[in-house]
Length: 342
Image 1 (cartoon, rainbow, N blue to C red):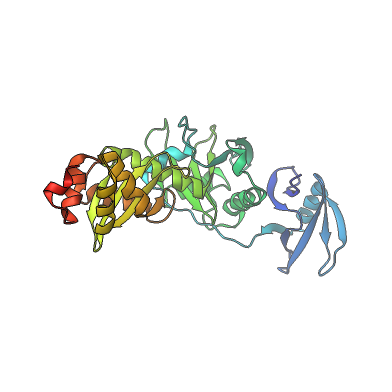
Image 2: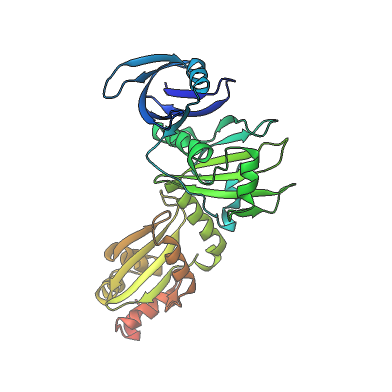
């Protein structure tokens, strides 16, 4: 059970949620500030703990709201982290829409929100995409992110229709071109998750979709999509000269990590041994692979895209696992032409 304490106003409008044992900040009418830990009891009751005690006073959530309003007090959540609206890149536009792509994007799900007829309410529904990524850590963080942009941020884009409209017109974001009305997109990054907010600052429509991603898998997906644009240029093995001999590089699309650059480093002695042991080009390159030093650059890891660009742009000494490449490597290793024939 995901224990969350709801805080509402006296009209039962939900203002924010905090996790069990979370902290609420209460600003009294005279300006005094109290920070109190709260203990979940059930969906409608919580205990406001006394300072430095594990017990306190029990409230119904509406009772608490009425007392606060009657006395002119204000209340808001306290979270340890802060979040910032960033401008997404143009190729991230697809990430605020449901996907038909069979590749795993790392999408956890999305929250659909609207501000109601008055423009200052907050109604939301959640849709799962991949529950494997829906951890307790994520669920707590999602509440933090939503509450931050409703209550705490200098850019409270989820607070009201007027706030969303103001922010979309003043904070740089990505304006979406394929909508029937003006729509804007923002990116929010945490340690492990990435959030994309699609905003429609128009009354009578759903005003926001918050798409939530596992960052590690998302970066892997983006790397694989990047490769798809250039795959025709890297489908052949390429051989580059190094200080000791050669480095063979190729892209493996079938790797467990979703794609990887395979690198095999070998010297002239390896070429000579492969030439001596093999009777065909396939055997020769098989020996090179088994005797050389092999390492991998996986999709989703730092440097992957730069490695792909390098593989595309650098001019190779040899390309392809062909007899021509085999003979060229033998020549580079000092094997005489008459020794190449077996």
